[in-house]
Length: 224
Image (cartoon, rainbow, N blue to C red):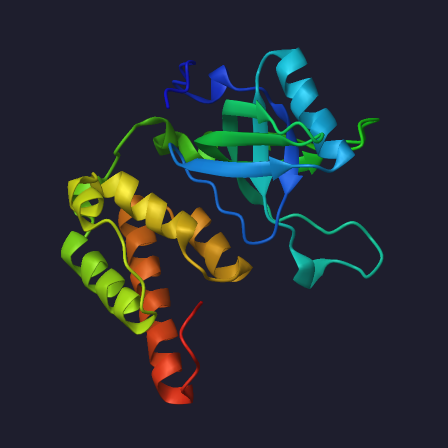
């Protein structure tokens, strides 16, 4: 779905954004992420995003390995901001929405705010290439990526729409597979922080191969 707003660079985005900490969630530029919003603080966050007109939410993972018990979790330093491009009311107090990724950001500081949700001052300068669609996709080893995907699907007895995969541009393919991958927060963060599309594809291939090798060694059952 079109974003209906043009983001040509960091100047087109606010310096302070609301953030939604969610373990294992990976949003990437031009990727689509569905969200089911039901907690009151995040319902208010969505309402405020529309009231303020920017319709932006920063997706970021909590870094539980560096968080104290009983405290709100420390955040990773890199996340991705998305714009709400679809919104529906469920009828039972929830929002069903879709975020379209715009660009990754570096957290400079968490702000002290009165809102129940967290807000951060962020910088997009390190990820200027995110504003250029399909940047570097000619460097992706598509054959190696599809081979890893084929082995993963076979090992886990899964099926996909191969016609859709074969017609997808490299950027859409790499980012969609990364976002849908079943790996943990550390792997998701590595995929997020990859400096370019080629490296992200290589990380995805390597993580998939390690997962397959582990299953062959330990005899773990396939993912359900």
